[in-house]
Length: 69
Image (cartoon, rainbow, N blue to C red; front, side, top):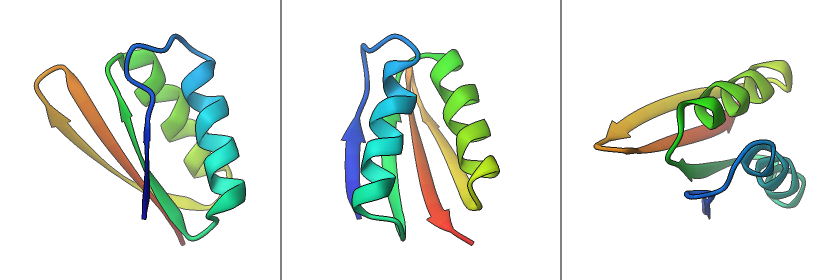
């Protein structure tokens, strides 16, 4: 599973990186972010496109794991 590092990037860039990665690997990816806006927007994107999402908080960093349902 590929991991996308979107830490330090402002929205909408984390969502755009997620969209690009999903096209390349539709089964699922992991995304690292460091702001609540990105967590919310990527979660919404995942749900709207048929992906389950696991959110793991680690200090200021959040890992979102998207898996095709």
